Image 1 (cartoon, helix red, strand yellow):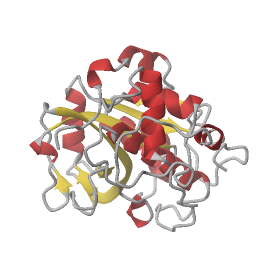
Image 2 (cartoon, rainbow, N blue to C red; image 1 turned 90 degrees about the vertical axis):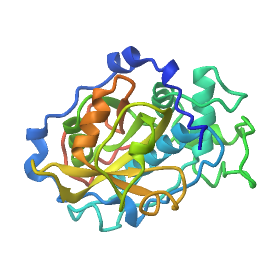
Image 3 (cartoon, rainbow, N blue to C red; image 1 turned 135 degrees about the horizontal axis):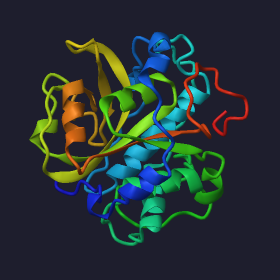
Image 4 (cartoon, rainbow, N blue to C red; image 1 turned 180 degrees about the vertical axis):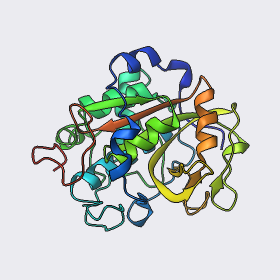
Length: 282
């Protein structure tokens, strides 16, 4: 796999930070945090193939997580009750629409996290049944006319730039949504027995999604995070990996790394589901 697809060379990091909501304080939600949030029971892992569409896959996965939570998933406190509605969003719409904002549409040359944030907030998420993957999977750069109105009801309202492990865990534990991450990708990101214990910088740019955390904790009591990758169920533990907090710390030590939590809230605040009735995902 050489065509990862995250265009870190084009990222607008300052713009992302300037429009970001403030991260939540860990202390504000620790007491009410569920013991785990495990999306593997319902979230489907896909395959980007040779396309540079990883950012679109990560973005649509984050949208699916927000939709599942907003429609009741996690009411039992553990994130595993399955009561949320499972809706798949089109990764190609997320990819192509982001490329349009990035000025890259027409060539399979990847996309940016900041463009994906704009896509989620301005265009929304198109249901997969409206814009399915072509068979065989290939790049067309063409967005069906019907995809735009289908995506419009599913817009995110805000984003939060994460700059530490605590930011990511707190965002997930507070039931805000998921975190889209752009990383330098190399052999250190190869799971061993489903785990990624350490991280080193370098490699091609790749985007993935952090969608929850496991019951596994480190010596400091920090939870391992669930990472979903778009390289099919043959990667890791059926497409997933548990990432150690120290590995996430090392990711943030690399200046290339970008992680952004996407939420349907106008102002992220800690709260328990059920979500408010006027949620755009409700």
